[in-house]
Length: 374
Image (cartoon, rainbow, N blue to C red; front, side, top):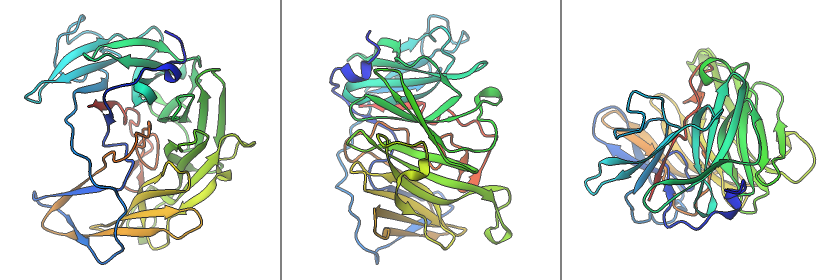
């Protein structure tokens, strides 16, 4: 297989759907199982999301490691596979379609991301030495993996998370962090983003000073502009009713990756969280590189708002969901437009921000370890 599989991949007859990768406004579903429901406030301006597409049940599930029952050459107690593919039966039960052995020196697979034209990218990491590798592969019509091979990049120092593939497959953007034990990021939080050219193997890195995290990494349609959110990691206060480190001062920027410089703060500001105790849980740049959407929460129990933003304008709240003590709400996201080819796991690409609290010791990788293929 040629190392630039993302450039040459064949068209696919399916789409990958991932709850962790929103590309349009949120969908909220109330479930009467006790707890908190968010009641819709219809007094705000109307939303701008397109109509929901018809639901297509997934045909395959691709997941890192051993993801379910099924026969394997090494048996269920043998070494964990690199990743597995399961096909869903008509009754909805998964059946093993393929189990991929870990390539030499690959380490453990951490993220699987859909690329353009039917290609996929899998990220693996090791702690000794602390480094990560990128592999490309394709999926046949019957769920078998083909053309699995390393991309032309060698190894990347450190752990990798928040992977995003450009629309043309020529570049991959991701966050990096040094290793602690058991594939956990080490040291104080630092916002760094690297862009890898899949054809040449060249890498370029941007960073920001101070204790910050970066997340929601995604490419614009032009394949040059990179969107991302940043948050400061600060000590919680008594007024916040939160102890320990928290994420605050969220912002979204759009970076021209072709411009000189290595400072993430040089990106054009698209959004800043307003004052008033709001916590941003989602903030994603749209494909046009100027607008975007997100979700914020405030209070305990929380009021949740959906919002949109545009460069040079104030954010616009499109829906408000107020707490109700009788029900609970599940907040999810579905793809309503073209795939974004991005992990989009939240304010911190490594998954260490849970609500607004920063959990430095959490096992962060693998947040995009599953892809559902329709």
